[in-house]
Image 1: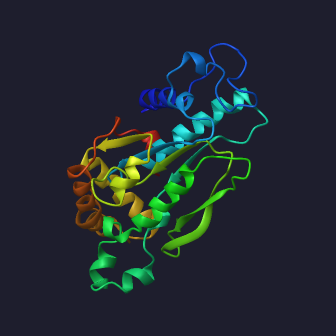
Image 2 (image 1 turned 180 degrees about the horizontal axis):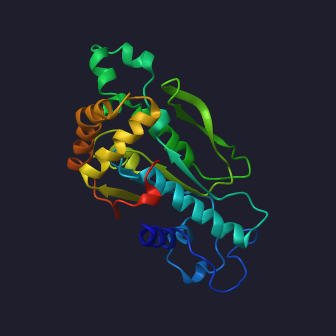
Length: 261
């Protein structure tokens, strides 16, 4: 995965090759932007670079988005040690419908059994967040807050994630961010790039079993396997079958350093 991450970091950002003045005074841009076609160097001074990382459950999209954001921040810190981090990875997990909302559906038993399917997410709310982050950055721009998901209580936690006003690169990650269905289709149009993490379904299944046991969703491998096959991988097939065109496809392969303990 390291070579693929390196490619995506270079495409998104760029490490300094020579020490030259910033493109504009107090700019966040890397010092060699004038020599680069990196996406951030082509981003307007008052805008955020927004990239959506999608893939089936168990593909490794969370690790990918976090790794790229971390490396960008490391490069930026080497050039601007006193500046706050410039990149963040933002999961869509916090946009799960609450248990109360699922219970209010016409078939709550089905809704709970299929939690994680596209219809169990608040896509319109996620679209609203993306639109908010797309607004021009000014001196008056405030931090933006997003929900997280607490597996212990099995519900979202409102305003638990902060996207600082100083953040200029946002890597969204989630199952449905390249799904050819509204409102995800409209959300995708607002992104600067769409990336898709491609994984063998069998690799994903094994990862999901471990994840479900660790999160307390399943008591044992048998329950974890049932959940993976009857829900997660069903969702995964929809994600693959109805994927929008993307700019990057990342191959997720078995890598012990990426596997959850």
